[in-house]
Length: 395
Length: 142
Image (cartoon, rainbow over all chains, first blue to last red; front, side, top):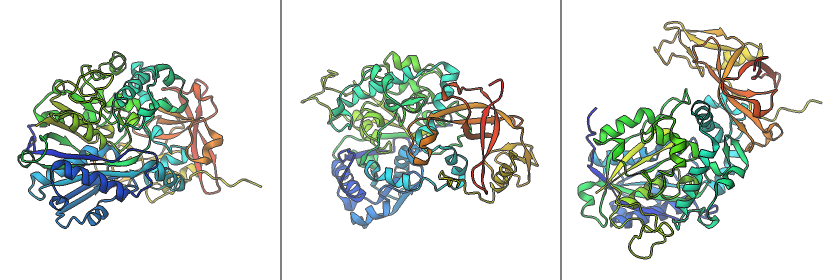
């Protein structure tokens, strides 16, 4: 395996986001358009310069689709559109698709977005089709597997039995991510204030081994970003954040001892010509505390089985060896299907750093107000089970 | 008068019909590849190992082990409310080279007692005249 041909050839040039809420009161088209127009403006481009659009969904397209956004924004020059069913595993797959379109010369400026009213509309829609049981679901749904925690809890239970990991280990991750969210003005859980280990341990069971504070929230909102060539990005408004390497394939989930990340990690690092030690920070898919933890292990950032103590020792904090989910993650920022992890990674890697913490002026690294990591060079971003992942570098 | 079964029911397809037919006869079945001998799960018409389309349905032993599990306390589908908390386990069936791992409920035991490695035996529940679901309960040894 050699470095990927795409290495450093493309970059993220613009980012945008809406408010993250539980009741947007607007259509997903409005959410998508708001985030997209902000991302396009942030890049220093105009909508007519967008010539490719990518998004993704899970099982049912209860999210803004691509074609209607292309119509809505009047993107008359769209050369390629792609709307994948890769679900939460596909945040990096979407960005990688955009990078491939640019590198292949099919498109020049590709918009990637995710817009959903998952809290206000998604819950009702899912309840309404609870008895719709076809395909592989016929072997799970009739037995009451009707919640993502039931799909992913088995990974946690298996790890607990094998390595002695406990729900107390999970608690430390939840507390740290909430702490990060308190320094993020757009984080949905910021108004709720900090949580303690005791709060976690006293919170009710949702699906054992996950308590309420192990589970991410559901959200209404949108984020968007623009991918272009690194060369073009250098002429735009912000310093580019370059795409080093990426992977975007799913796995068959036949065992629960590790995730697809264990398979894809070597391809990702070799594709970028780096090792896990070179990673400065990680924005890791975290629908449940333990899923974040297993992804950290499976991407080779912590030895298998040792994630519990590593989290307890706080290595994932802003000043730790490897800051993780510096925005608060899906747990405490918002669930925008993991594309919000890119907004954070790009902010952290830009020369000016994050713009929506509590610092007034330059970054102070005072953890009462500042969530900027000190001089990060390389960020890992991943989706559910490492089905897709990407390495980004300060441009 | 019997109360209608309100929970989601499997919708059999050409690949899965023989499995559900077996359940109705209180018999657990899985496909075994006629070319390479591998068991597979869930049912499909071709072998994921060697891609042969030749297979036979074989009767499985009634026992297996809990490989991993969750326990549902917070119910999103109302028809399961009276069941909660209930265990959803991945059960490795004996005699299948660990290739047949069925998702089902472990019943007849408090949820706190369910554990990885627990020995279980199938217990068929005839939930409608047409459909039987394979559930599992601890063997004597647990």
